[in-house]
Image (cartoon, rainbow, N blue to C red; front, side, top):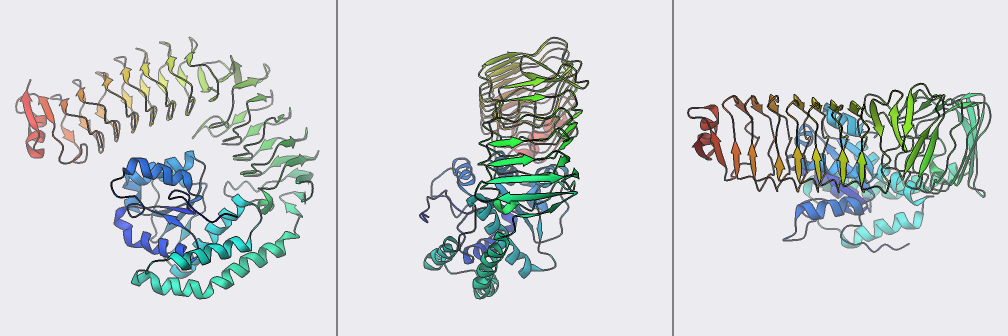
Length: 558
């Protein structure tokens, strides 16, 4: 194995708020003491380099992301962007909390599937658990544990380690003293478990044939415990499995059943199967074909997420649930899908031109992300574009939206990097959170005048956005609505807007002029970057004039 590393090819990327710098450095030193290479800003960023360039490269090059959980981290735009990037790149994530912190909705959604390590009652044990957890993730990615590799990492660190901080030395020395025991324990445990190639899961049994690379699940009933964070008992072999055979009699396969089985190419499912668990085939990159049996009623959230070789799938008439209606109604995001077909007898779903709809075709649920078409015309009669419906459709340049559409749901077009312009119809009433998030080529948005609500971060990170007209029926500019839109230079806010929320125009480095109507009575102190030069136009003696004066902006009366 080659132990040489580029500046971006590290074991661990550490994501943290600058207010938890000491805690992050402690984690860095402990991981280094365990022979693990780390990357963290700002120390790992070369002098004169751009954060926005270096951080994405480091996340892409790492194997595991450790996020230091805190209230400050949840308020940090950098941490949020780093986590989003890590999830998009399908990195293993380990949340670590020094204090008991409540996760807000956005963070809870992002981190709900990852096992959290709490250090507030047992710091030393938690740090030791962190080292072992990162090692387990790396071993899972690499296949079977490699004692030589683990010892080489430790040797590499001892040759190149810098002086540890005083706070970290005590913990690091303790870990170094026990490191041989940790390594031996991991290796010995792996050796002991190497012979465990069969067992019980739920109401069924499993057997793994190492020579054939075949996993077999058999029995009568559900091979599932319904826990979305469950670790399947054959997880140590996940990188080796090439064939999955589920025998007749099995009614459910568990959540995460084959998650990360990148060598899996052949799957046989029985007629008795009714449930495919959440994330069941997540990140099975080599899987090209799968036949869903006619008795299946439920396909869990993210069941075929990141199956980049899976180009088509047939949904039988029996299926009544795809994904989670509260998050996303489909199970194939970030896949290689080019077309989806639904049995005509299905009472809940339908397909048209390779896309997924509800039965009445009033809601577009899923547009296959790897379709080669550069343009798409949503059919007349569609009233709603579902959550993540077009997410990460990298070939789309334009989408035609009919007047019948009234709602665009959360993240509907997020990550459509080539989408250049969008015209929103007069019938549109609501745009969800992050609807056009990371549409980096989006230059202009033409909006009908009936939009009453636009969610947070709806146009965040649209780096090419220069032109947008807002509806007169809006009542607020939501949190981070235009955050990180550096090409936006002038913005006319129509009468009717009453408030501008936090981070609405943060990192809009090109913004130099804005019209704020007399109806605005509240602007969050963090709505704009501090220290920017901004020309504000508004009514004489208005809140806009007072706001401009308080922040040192140039004001001109309308």
